[in-house]
Image 1: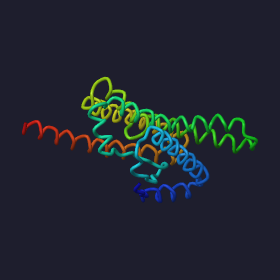
Image 2: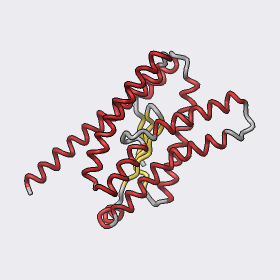
Image 3: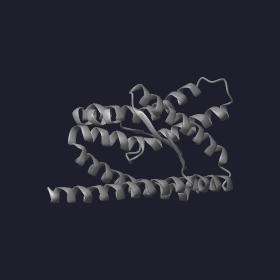
Length: 216
């Protein structure tokens, strides 16, 4: 399994230190790691092969690859593999829900308990956004893939991600003015980075398909 560190994490780290929110960031990274371990455990149970682990500004990301055997299954039983991917995507947020519930019964201080609950709730809400490659976007794409086909799923997922980010940016702008919290600004900027990156991949893939169709 390949391992990579996104260097933008050091920029986030510096900004959280300067704004005296490093403790919150540390908690977020800890539970983001447990979140990804939930994905990993689900993937291993479903016999998927871990391909890459990456430390990113807002947590840890684990991706799964396909072997030749899996690729043959993808052609023959595409929907079942898509269901597996949906289950893996769901496993991360469910892990944080479990941590949040357990935190309610831990014999710890109220301050620590509230911090655990707060950071896990943030991770759940963030990852359930319908923006690919977040868990919500992966689940959305998987469901659309099953019912509408992969091409339509990619198109709709890309469009929904753009619209969702625009709406979130508008809401976040009001929140930034009210709370003057740089963390909100960083999260919005990171979401736009994800959307622009995936939109570029989508456009390039569409151009490639058009060329292939033109040749055929």
